[in-house]
Amino acid sequence: MPDMVRPRAGAPAPPRFRRHAFFDCGGTRLLLSPAEDEGQSLLYITCSDIHATQKRLEARGVTFINAPHMIHRHDNGVEEWMAFFNDNEGRPLALMEQVAPSA
Image (cartoon, rainbow, N blue to C red; front, side, top):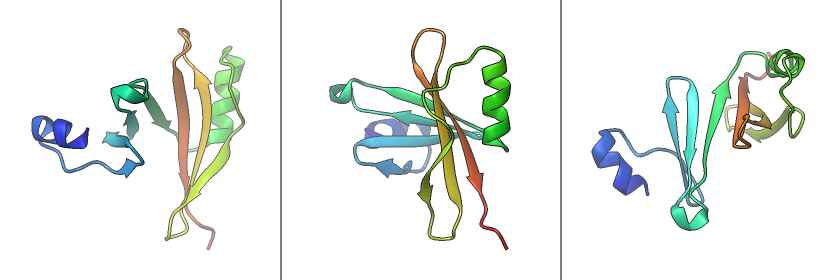
C-alpha cells in the first residue's frame, strides 16, 4: 500500500506495522489498512494529557473502549499512550500522547 500512496502524495515512506501504514498529518496520525484487512482507517488524535482529555470527553458523553494505557516504549525511552473510543457512527478513534522519560 505505501508504494501506491507515496508517489501520489510525494511523501516519504510512512512507518509500517505489519501490513498497516501510518501517516503523520500535522499531529494527527492516520492508520490505513489494506482492503483485504477490511480496509480500516483510524485517526490517532494527539493530546498533551491523555488522562485529562479522556475525562473532559467523558463529561461530554464520549464512551471509551478502554482506559489510557502505554502501548509502546521507544528506544529513547519515550512512551506512547493511547485510549480508544468510537465516534457517533461507531468508527474507532484514539487519543495518543507521547510521554518523555523522567529525568
